[in-house]
Amino acid sequence: MEIKARVFDPVTLKVDCLVLVLPPSEDFSDVASPVNRATNGVIASAIKDGELAKSGDSLTLYATAGLACRRLVLISCGDKPLSETQFDKLLGKIANAVTGTGIKTAALCLNGVSPQDKDSGWAAAQLAKVLGEQAYIFDQYKSKKDTPAPALKKLTLHSLGSKVTGDLNTAITRGTALARGINFARELGDLPPNVCNPTYLAKRARELAKNQPKLTAKILSEKQMRDLKMGSLLSVTAGAETPAQMIILEYKGAPRSNAPIALVGKGVTFDSGGISLKPGAGMDEMKYDMCGAASVFGAMVSAAELDLPVNIVGIIPAVENMPSGNATRPGDIVTSMSGQTIEILNTDAEGRLILCDALTYVGRYKPKAVVDIATLTGACVVALGNHATGLFSNNDELATALLRSGEAAGDRAWRMPIWEEYDQQLKSNFADMANVGGRNAGSVTAACFLARFTRDYTWAHLDIAGTAWKSGGNKGATGRPVPLLVEYLSSQAG
Image 1: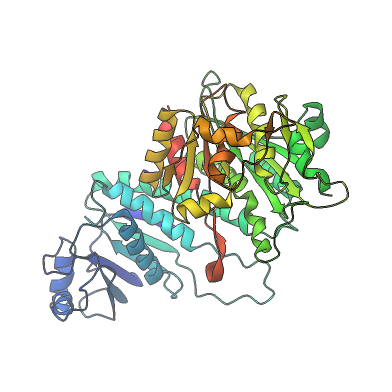
Image 2 (image 1 turned 90 degrees about the horizontal axis):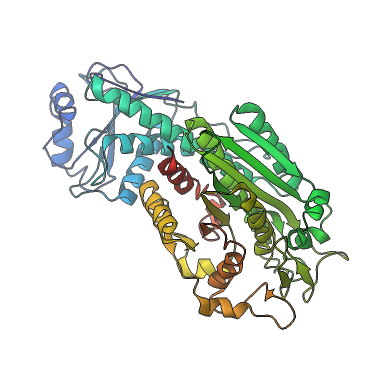
């Protein structure tokens, strides 16, 4: 789908569908007024009859006399300032009006409609992102695919002048690149675990690097990880037949002297719980335990498409957590790459065991900041539900930057504590630490565990267990927190 901004006359433009977003009053914009006049007051009549009373109300008119378009869609934005959430819902309404309905060409007049403190460029980027996400379909494993309506080929966004057009098109490019990264992450998450295993993720990393000149890929084998003494990570993969892979993606968008931003993503491609076996109900969703890794892939895709002037290193420890005669047992003690020993009390607390060695390894890059992303704890879902990502950090400046990025991208996070009192729950009688700290404050003690391996650099942890995928009838990966990460990387460019 091509999305472009340009100046046009909504009365004479020949398109399959013209969409006007307007308030539920007769205080028309400079765009709606000529359309209303050309149609002998059809918009005013619809408003007077209460057709567009509330935000999101819509009316579709076919072959309207006086207009060159085949159909006219009127959508109300309400009579109160829109929040960002309400604006996203409005964009969803617009997307539904122009996609999946057989429309091939459409034009949209969105002038002056955006949340408070947001400009038209922000609105254009959000539009491109929403339309890009709307185009995502995961049906490659269905033998009988639904026959979709012809896809929308071109959407023209109305611009108030040539001076504005360039800025709008730049914003559209940004939103489109973000959607591609989000959809890349969604696809990896939605793939079945018999396809998307550690070997497959390594293959996708090599393919990405092959197609992006500023991106390189390096894969560490289990032997190389053993030589690096990553005993904690290897303990998780001990029961699996598919070998673990340590995937290293480097994006070089700035001079080599610039310290990189490091993203570390949990890549458990299937989590059975190991010997501490999970309940069978809902275990199919444990293919989503690699969504942290998927978000690193997605952020790198968007960063490369946007040609961000920043250096990024993505570290993805990819494993399966399976039970077998060789699997790690509760009570086993392992030695991490850092030299710290860990008593494994629960093999289903495996994400932190692979992340701790990855977090030690990433220190050799002398990063400006490290952000790890993981579907780490069900406790975070209990605490924050499915709306906000849990944020933990050893640095106030980094935490603030990530929170602001989440707000700007509509992909919010909420900061949680990692106080010393919680860290005490990890005490072990037999090793330097236990891998779990008891039932209370489970997401916090998991973050405290990771913090023990990040003392030498600025670090933040994003627990995305509640935000990375949806369950139920709309089951599927969300692509979060790719928007937050890309916004943060963009803010650090230069």
